[in-house]
Image (cartoon, rainbow, N blue to C red):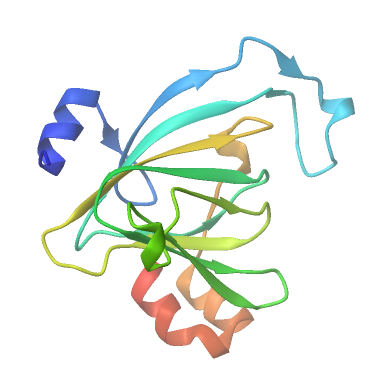
Amino acid sequence: MNSAKFWVDYLGLEPHPEGGFYRQTYIASEAIAEPHLPHRYKGQRPFSTAIYFLLEHPDFSAFHRLGSDEVWHFYTGHPLTLWLISPQGELSYLHLGPKPHQGQTFQGVVPAGYWFAASLDVPGTFALVGCTMAPGFDFADFELAQQAELIRQFPQHRDLIERLAR
């Protein structure tokens, strides 16, 4: 297995505002006009988008939410945990990784409107994944959590939010 630095250099990844590294690999050439999208979207969106995303321990992908469902695809490295908080405050998680017989999955879906974060449990490890969205990603739909506000909304998840929100 190659190192995180190898993949960052080889794939031309750049730092992401939520943590980790990314590069957009696909943006559909066609777009959905704003009148045909749910009201939460301001402006048109591409049919779909895709990125590479790499996370290296001890870094984490900080809690954030998006306007579209996001499908995560595991490629290589070590298992990654996605922590999801529903709009109603229910906590769930997905374990992405190469060992389905150990409860890991190659793909997982984060529903639109859920707060979510990602982390690795083992020091010195990394995970290379991909993320696809439809309608496609636009930073206008990206909301990075404010730690104090998220704790106010979901005090039952204080410890996790303190660990995975900036």
